[in-house]
Structure formats: structure tokens, C-alpha cells
Image (tube, rainbow, N blue to C red):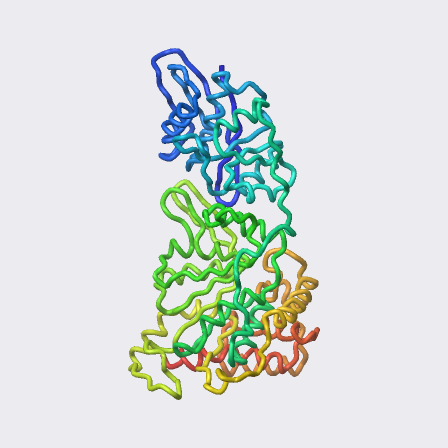
Length: 510
């Protein structure tokens, strides 16, 4: 006799269906598991046997064989404890109802209680696609699972409760569908009204947010670079439901949800400068996990103390910034994670931090400054659309009682500019000026004759690369959108060029 029980697994960003097959053979008592299980799955034998025994269930002293199909895909993690338990109870006649339209995922404790697992959202989405009508998940994961329509989600606390529900001895209603309107903000985001002075930097950040541009902040210690960066999510457009789903899938796989359901505020990831290339890009031994660049998908990746990051880690960013996705290849496994991000970096102009500062004396030699700045490669620096200086705030500005703009006021202008871009490019990943491709340039970046002469002069005088030329034009397009102008004018180009001049001020000396 063979009993089948539906479960699911994770491969990259997507789930896949797994069938847990249980068979009882004559012979000496044994418990064999096949189907490419990893160490955590093989250990399920001991967890499940203990959980069933401690919950009052009995397994006959027989030779039990479990197969996890498809057998050519490696099964990982403790998520199969629950389906293995159900298959064994069904095999021994302790569950008597039909479970062909059900799926089960979850880890068990030795006492038979369920524990939360990673990757529930993509697995529930896959279950719906496979025509499964009911899915049973640990109670800790129910908010995450209940955002998916077309399937009944049942929260489970222990294996005894699950048996009673399946046998009809206990009536339980499925979890209510969690709608976007039922969600609360995932966290507090500071406001720009708390920032004194720094009008030029705030203007550059507004442009960056309006067009999704990468921005580099350069200034001495204490000038407010990190403070400005942490407020950027407060002026970014609200997330669409599709963005929430995709972002939540990544965080679900990485195990960073904490039972919050959908992520409905744009991520702000700020890894320490000691992060490794794997930590930033993703990977690891065994299961390929998303890195910081993917965890920041649809949000902001903030790199503070930019030159202090290792060269290997920083170079990981070059391809994902352009392609909006990162492919990680390991022996026998390839995973592609999305990473449509806004990169914000902050740095000092020299090791001591006071190069070019009028109020402090720089103690660094030219050699030290050169070595420090050259930690950032030219190709990576070229991928920042906007470079802006953040000077020290003056005492009068700190003590000023003048009311500054709130994030809500700035966000209105950003939303208006993004709406123009949505009408221009449609919806979807990368529907903003920073992601304009070669085919869209001619129709999107219409400039008048005077602006074209200004751009040509800047290109020749500053020696811009082709990539820098494209980025200047994209920034000018965003500035024009903020002013509701269909045509890019000369003043828009001049302001955009201004944001590409700091690399000449600092890196030309190296």
C-alpha cells in the first residue's frame, strides 16, 4: 500500500510541488527516506517519530519507506515534518479522510507543535497554481500565507489538532484573506521635516527619488549624509500590490518576515561595510539565499562609508545595478533573484574626512587621499547618476525656527513625476527614468536645440563616457518631469550636469 501526501519546496524565487509517498513493507523495523533529502530532511525521521509518540500516536514496528518526489531535485530544510507525519498517519489508518486536494508544510517540535518556516508565500502561490484547494501551515506563517487568493489556508498549532481537523472531529474556519487595506505600516520612517539646512542635498535626493536614480553623497563627518539617506523611503512612491508580493517572497525565502504578512513599506537595507561579496550579492553553501542587493528589491540599498567596503563586495553590484536582477550559480544549481533597487552611497572625501572643508584642517597626504578614493572603481562610480556634496550644517541653520518641508510635501512632487513616467513607460519593474533603455531613449528624452548644444558642450568639456552621457540625459528627463515639462530644456541639462561634476573635483586628482 502506498499513500501520497502533497507538499511543496523552494527553488530560487519559486515554489514547486513535492509528493511525499509512504509505503510499509514487511521485514525488520526501519525508517528509510529517499528522494535526495539533505541533512535537515533526513533528521525529520527522528523529529516525526518523537512528535507522533509524544502526541499519543503509534507506529507499527515495520519497514517504512518514504519517497520525496520528484527524486531528482534536492529537498532542503525542515518543512517536510508536517507532510511526513500526515502521510504516516494516513498509512496507519489514523487519518481516514481524503487528502488529495490538501497540501502540508511545516516543521515539528519533539512535542508535536508546529514551528514557523521560511518561503511560505511562494509555496502557497505554487499550490494555488497546482489546483490545491486547502493548505495547512504553521500558525506563525498564516498572515503571510493568507494574502493569496483561491486557496483555503488553515493555521495549525500541533499535529493532534491537524488530525482532528482532517477527520472532521474539529471544525475550523480557514484564515480570512488578508487584503492590502488590512495591513499596517511595517516600520517607522523618519521625516525630512527634521532635517535642518542641506537644501541642495535635499533637492538632489528629491530628483533621485522621482526618477529612481542612484545617488552618491560626499561630505565630512557629521554633515548629515546618513540622516538624509534614512529618510529617502519616506518620499518614495507607495508600493503596488504586485511589488509587495514580490518583495515579500524574497524576504520570506530569507526568513526575515517575523510573521508580519506582506511587506508594504519600501525596504531600506544598510549592510555594514564588513559585509562579504556573498552577503551582498547572495549565495552561501547549500541553499542559495538572497543577498542584501535582493533584500532591497523595490527599495533602497544604502552603503554607508562606501570606500570601506571590500573591492570584491562592491564589484558584485556592477551587473545587478544595470540588469535589475542577479543570477547566482553554484554546482548543480542556478538561482535568479530580482534587484530593482535605488543605490544610495555615502562617503567622506578622504580618510580623515575633512578634505576641502573650510572649518577643519585635512591631515591626509595626497597619497592617502588617492589610495582612499581609488577603492571605488571607475565603472562603479559611473553607475551613480547623481553625485552631490553634503557640506557641514551652519549654526544659524541648526538654530533656525524656519519650517522645512515635510516628507509628505516632497512625496507629492515625486508621485506626480512618477505618474508621468508610468504613463510614458507603463507599469512593471523599472518603470522609471533611471531604467530607460536604448529603445526608449529617442521617444522619452526629447530635447530642444539649445539643450542639445549645452549637452554637447558638457560632453566634450568634461570628457563624459557614453554611460555618463546617458545618465545625464536621464536625470535631465526627471528634472523636466518634476517641472511638468514634456521637453528637456537647457536649464534641466545644466542642473543634471552639475550632479556629474564631483567626480572631476575629487577623482581627477587621483
